[in-house]
Length: 591
Image (spheres, rainbow, N blue to C red):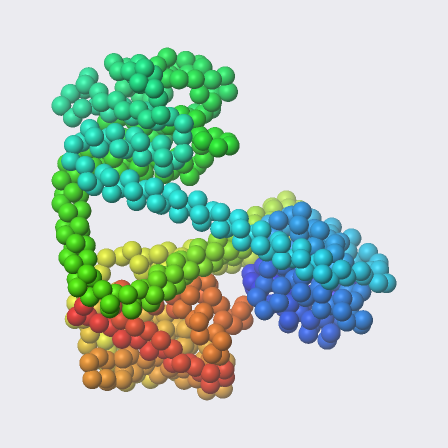
């Protein structure tokens, strides 16, 4: 049978593809990126290459470029398989580099097999035209379009965040609950983007007394809502159900949906209940989404949160406390401005540094969002789609009575589900490392590290971990978070030291004049200076798919250390291991 090379930077995707091809009787081999794939093609001369497009080190297009440039390899048949590029542009670029078949993840197993058979039957052209300048421009344009799309999404999110921040500031400075409700009505319209907004809320002192607020309507149209039953029709149903609801009204007549005639004609609407934990007070009704299309799932979620926040503020009388907090913050800012006026020269000297710091923080946030989007679309969507495809195969095997193959498919589904669960767990840990409140106390670090090693000890207990621990001083920190730091660093060290002939991991401390610096050292693969900038960024895997993980462990450690007002850094060299240092400042800002 023909030999097929599968190229993908995710081991789970490669395993799924090779399992399916093996079932069809093909022999296979694997590569984690385009550079490794070139080496394998030269060594193995496969009949077909199934290649991902978006990969580290060398992407799929560059791989095919290099392949076509080598006369001995130029006729190798290639299938692109991707979940990240837009379909039309991906097909155009594929055709430009002599690739006639493109699969889009998640793929049906039968589609994969039929595409493979067609590619194997295809006779490669003697000469493949390679319009280098045009291809480069189109390749760059495709990548740029993806970046612009993500930038537009981020800009839209920032605009909403700004509107929400401004609204919260207005709510925090308003003591009158009914003036606050008017601000809520206006803010909901600005936040979501609607033509009109109507709010109806029962007064605290009685069921029949209702406060109405509108925004965008004329005074005459707004007056028609006065005296309307706040619990009538779909508006009251949303209020009683305590859940948001979207309305589509192609005819435009509000009466067709059971709404009162006070409502203006509209094509689409969004209603969210103004509620507290115990009681429903009313609703916010947005009429006609601005722009194109009706209200979205995200609009519904955001308005529901906004309305629930308004309900809680309205009920518990926290407006005064919010205003007092704002006043305290204002007093602090005034004091800081007075100090800045007295030290204007120093402020001017440090202004550029502050701007650079803020810019770097924003860049890190943007990169984190982009990495998260890639992880969810590329790392999570692929396995889930694979699970669905293999599940259908398992069903077919069960139906045909082939229990052996069915069992194999079920084991593969279980393995992919476990990998997906690990990824979701890592994302939750990453989020909690910032959101969890700190509970500091004096900690016996020696005992804590001993507990970590017992936790990491293999279940069979026959193999001792190659870890030595020095004399560690006590510290003041959050015990659970500090334990997570040592778990991540020691696990990381053991993973990369495993390739050494005699793996060694050392946990110790350096005593400096005003602080103790903990370190975890290994004799593993290490890292180069060019990788240092990516070391603590989320979703960055310096060594590609050769080692298990999602690129979140060191990011979690950095966030925990910084929450303790500490610092973390690393030293290493390729093939000479790595050392991670961190210090904790328990005397400043730890609560």
